[in-house]
Image 1 (cartoon, protein in one colour):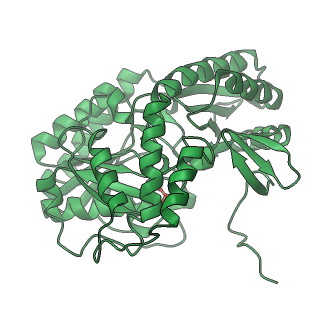
Image 2 (image 1 turned 90 degrees about the horizontal axis):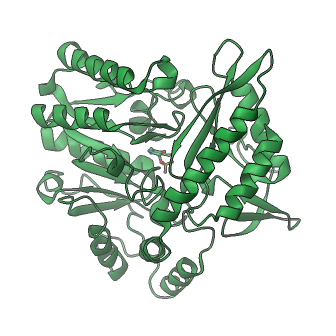
Length: 417
Ligand code: PLP
């Protein structure tokens, strides 16, 4: 008898039979409050009726039209619609299926456009699991060990992770930018550096928001040296952080934006966006994929954008996110650290919120985070962990979450910690 790979590690033993809004229902009909949204994917809530309707209509009309052979209306309409929400000047789009593939596409484009080999990433980064994207990933050794050699030409600079360094944000940012300058002086000369790739909020790396001084610093250095600034919005895009794009908080105008996850409410779809003159530097045929820009996924994405706009989900993410963060801080302040463990930090942006567990001597405590995640799962609250040791329990509910559901989630959380 065949079985799923043992390498597939499941946090909560739930077999989902169906899902609606912020709830997943298991095969016994029990409701689970889903504060994972399929890792930040089902932003419009599970099975939003408008997304379902759009996808059903498209399935019966045209499922697959490969873009090197034929174009189709959902792809063209989505391209147009995304133009309304993308940063100014990023008027050319290319579609693939997953975040990793889009990161690959951005990296390929940056190297082709600049004819430079190297990429700078920031400590704690997660950009995916293909060998190329894993080479850009530094958030945990499990994502990059045991299958090397990884891609050469990747230089790692610090991210202004104030909690990790035990400094205030300004000091951490000054340090990160100074080290970046040092890296450009000694490890990867600007003339060899194609791109910086950065997440507006470190995702898998532990839910650490960047800041304005840091992104401005990257933008300024990128401009000065002809280096491209790639902003990976795979987890932070489409309203997740309480603004449409994560980088909207921080003033770091990108040259290339990478998107996926929240784009199509659960259908596999991802995209890169760049100015046309930059995108034109990708050699014809060097980008693409059999399933990229699938018609059903594009139809679902158009409906997703409409729902985000009509239901004011960006605003909801900001408001509910603030409630969630202050609720988590209140729980943390009541949490009694014992001789072995405590809560070190609570942080986040919009509906990306993380609680970091530490041992009594301040080291990352993945064991306690896993126990709390499991305890929450037993109470009916689905959660994820992140961080180098899995020490951060993160909440990333669908953007349709209500104030009452946030309160309910916090109640379950407070019983679990
Ligand atoms: N980039 C970021 C910031 C991510 O969070 C992820 C996935 O979590 C990826 C890229 C990779 O996306 P995918 O898992 O769809 O390949």
